[in-house]
Each structure stands twice: as structure tokens, then as C-alpha cells.
Image (cartoon, rainbow, N blue to C red; front, side):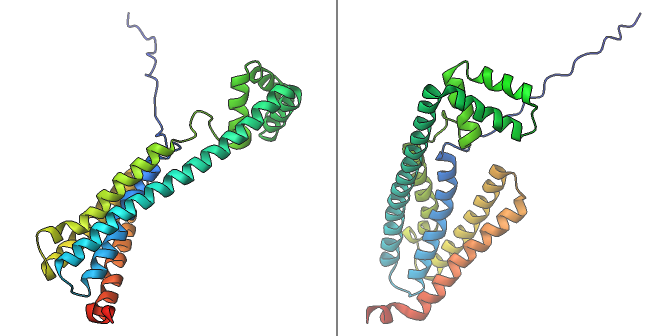
Length: 243
């Protein structure tokens, strides 16, 4: 006799990336900003046809200054955001301690506004308020839209921003350590465009968007960043800039 007992299907598991911590976002913006800004700087200076030493100096200053600027800005913005969220959590924590019934009723109203019937909303809110930590986490999620355990790390975000900006900014600068003139210019253009495509594909993988569309958008941004400053540098020239 054949056993026809149905075999349970394996549980489907899926995992979400942690995109609230700040470091991933800082890394994505960092490498893109580093590439775009230093492509513009290097080719803008190169458009005036100075010596390779001048282009190298400009590119190195752009890399180091931009990386420190990005890191400092990311740290300050993340720290301010974290302090603001911590303040809101402290307020919510005090209210849960001082006025638990009022906070429980607020949670009931939130659940009711989402279509949950009164009895079940009361049960859920009461259960959440049995544990003060769970109550705080629930109110933070429902009222503030945040996870108290994931407020972001300013230090990790600033380090990620610094490193990735430097990596992106280094690409268009590399040819000027081994070449000069038109050869270095075309090599910078090529590396900038290849880097833009790579960043576009990486962004698409990270966001789940169309690879072709995201890469094309990034390529367009890179092309504008390379072309417009170069034309301006060519029009101004070293001689005009020195006047």
C-alpha cells in the first residue's frame, strides 16, 4: 500500500538587508560621489592642459578633501539623527512609565485605524504593555516608524563614506600617475565611464531595480561630470585662469 501522506513543503525563508544602519547608504553614496566629483575635478583641470603634476595635485586634494568632508558630514548628520531619535524614545519611555493607560489606548487607536476590530486591538495593546521594553519597541515602530535597536552608527557610516569616496575618487586619478596629456585624459574618461557602469550595476543589485536603467542613469551622470568640466577647462585654459 502506497503511503499518500502529504509531505510538508520546506519553509520558505527570505532575508532583508539592514538598510537603516547608515553604513550601507553611506557606502553607496560615497563611491558614487567620489567618482563623479573627482572625474569633474580631474578632467576640468586637465581641460586647461597644465602639466601632469598640476592634475595629480588637484586630484589628490579632491580625493583627500572630499573624503574627509563626506565623512565629517555623514558623521554629523547621523549623530544628529541618532540624538533626535533617542530624545523621542526617551519621551515615549517616560510616557509609558507615567501614563501606561493613556499609551495603551493610543496603541489601541493605531490598531483600530488599521482595520483591527476593537476586541482584538485591546488584546494586542494589553499584551504589548505587559513588558515595558516590548511596549517601547511597539510604540517606536507604530508611532515613530523606527526600530530602537537600529538607530544607526555615526562612526560606521563616516568610515564607510570616507573609504568608498576615496575609492571612487581614485579611479579617474590613476592614469595621471603613469601618463600625461591626451593619453591620461582618455584613460580617465574610460575609467570614469567603466566605474559609472559598475556603480550602476551595484546600485541595481542593491535596490532591486532594472540593471540596464540604473547603469544607464549612472553612465549619463558620469558622462556629464566628465564632459562639462572638461569643456569649461578647455575654454578657460591655464593662461586665462592665471590672469
